[in-house]
Structures are given as C-alpha cells and as structure tokens.
Length: 400
Ligand code: LCS
Image 1: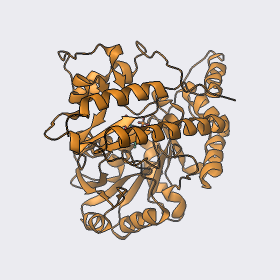
Image 2: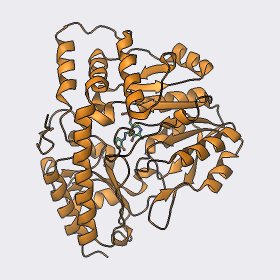
Image 3: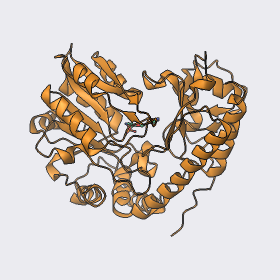
C-alpha cells in the first residue's frame, strides 16, 4: 500500500484550530488583531496536528459505525477495545497493560487537569521539566497548585538532558507531590533512555511523588527507535500513571479519546467515582481500528517524517548556520535554537506571522528555558515545509 503524504488538503472552514483558531490560541486576539497575510496565505507550522489525511482503515471504521445510525451514550464496553490497545502496547513496546487498569478519557489534557486535582491538595506543588508543553503548568494553575520547574540542560552535542541534581533538589521539597513527565519529550523530542527513566522514577520514589507519564508522542519515533513506557520498567510501582492516545499518531485529536493506565486501586476508585465516564462512539471505533490496523500506515508516516527532518536539518545547516538544531528522536516537531537570529525579539510568533507569513510557536509559549527557540511542526507535505523554511530563511538571514 502506498500513501500520499504529499497531498495538500484544504482545511479551511472545518472548525480546525490549526486554520481557524490561531488568532486566539497563539496571539490571544480579542478580534481586533490585523495581520499582513490573509488566512490562506500563512504557512502553518504550529499546533501539533498533522496536515495528512488519517489512515483509510480508520476512516472506514468510522464509516461502518456511522452506518449503525444510532449514537447514544457510549463507552468501551466491548473487550475488543481493550484488546486492540493492549495488543498495540505489547507489539510495539513489549509492555503489558492490565485490563482493569485501563480507563478512557476525553483527552490527555483533561486527564492531567483531573488527576492533578485528585492527587494533590491545596498548598502542594507539581514538578515539571522545562521547556514544557504549557498545559502541564496549566494543570497545576487550574487547581491553584504551585508549579516547580527543573530546567533541561544541553550537553556538548546539543542533546537535551535532565539535570538530576537539580531534579532531586526540587523533588525533595515536601510540598511537591506530583511530577508530570513527558516521555518522549515535547518540545525537545528526546526519547529518554532506560537509565534516564530509571533515575527520574527513583528520585520521585525516594521523595514520595506520583508520576503522570504523558506518553502521547510515543508512537512517533524516528524509524528504528523503540519507545519504553516508564511504567514498563517499574511494574511494582503503582504510582506511575501512563497516558497514551491514538490522537497524535493517527491525526485524530478532534475525536478526543485517550487511554489512561492507572495501576493504583485507590486512585482508580476515585477516578471511577468522579469521572464523567462516556466516550464518543465514532472515536471508539476509530481508535480501535487504528490500534488494530494502523501499523503499516504509521511506518509509512514515520519514513516520510524522517525525510522531512533530514530536509530541515540540511536546510538549516546550509542556509541558517547559526541556528542550532539536532534531528529529534521523537515527535514531528523541530525544536530549533534560533537565538542568534532573534536577539531582542519579545514576541517570537508575532515576528514570524507578521514578517514571514509563518505560524509557529516559540519562546515563552513553552513555560521557561525556551528563549530564542522556535518550534516547527513538520507533519506536513514536503512542499509546504519547503515554503515555510524558505520564508523563515528570508526573515532571519540578515538578522544575525
Ligand atoms: N500532552 C502532550 C505532551 C502534548 O504535546 C499534547 C498536544 C497533548 C498532551 C494533548 O493531548 P489531548 O488533550 O489532545 O489528548 N500537543 C500539542 C502541542 O504541542 N501543540 O498543539 C497541541
């Protein structure tokens, strides 16, 4: 089977955040903001969804469910849903997920919010690594909990690593009760090694922290690399919660369904008592089909993304040599240190929107430890990527 990842698909007027919601999300526009580009003229490299069609096997499963014609209250009652997810985890990560530990939710972000409320009490704090997907901090903010950041550091080769001494110091704060951990990491794209995962879990264990391991990007590794769920390394530690989803992998974020593995019985009882426990029947059909039949499409997607990353790395090395960039081990997001070109720029996304016609995220959109960085979404046809990079080059080339 071949798949056409070069196809340009028109997303306008489809209520997509990517095309129709960027003003509010990126720029907090109150409706008065003006841009020198019309909406359709922007090259969009921002929110983490894909410009690619979802796999046909997934769309067909939704069609079959539509043909059943009734869409009443639904939930993953059929064990086939669990079996599809467990089969995927077993096949792809060599990890066994207990049936009784799996719950479903309308997204990983709502889950972070919900679990933070169940796990922490007023006055307590949440630990994260920075730069960070900002909703980790928002989950703490939502409950009025403090958020403590341990900044990642870059080694001599530009690889982001964890400052374990700093992490241990922050974890030792008796008010810190939960770490929200991103594996693989958004935005740096690090796939943590077994040793790194072990050290994080040991530090958290020593200081009595719960861990929510957000593994939503775990299927999107560069070809040949393999994901390790943190919980796989610690089968006896029931304080590690794992969040996974087919949403990033198969471009189904709008279907709002995620899989949450909660091994701790007490916490699961709280979840089951308080969670509004229904799912969208179309989402259930799509997600089950993705896990059952999506492997081949995913391998093709990964190969295409590998090519987009090589193209980007070569382009930056040749045209913007002062940008520091390593092809990430995971995600479809390029985390580029463009600080040499962005001295004195306060609002990085606005600069690119106004002067390059490119929508991207960067700088303080990633909580902290992210000054001068831009994040480019490469899950797009090569021709879009080329045009985006061409425009970025046009803007930056004379700024260093
Ligand atoms: N967790 C991480 C680490 C993410 O990167 C994202 C989406 C989510 C959770 C969202 O999960 P959902 O609620 O959809 O299940 N990341 C995005 C990003 O970096 N930009 O746009 C979305």
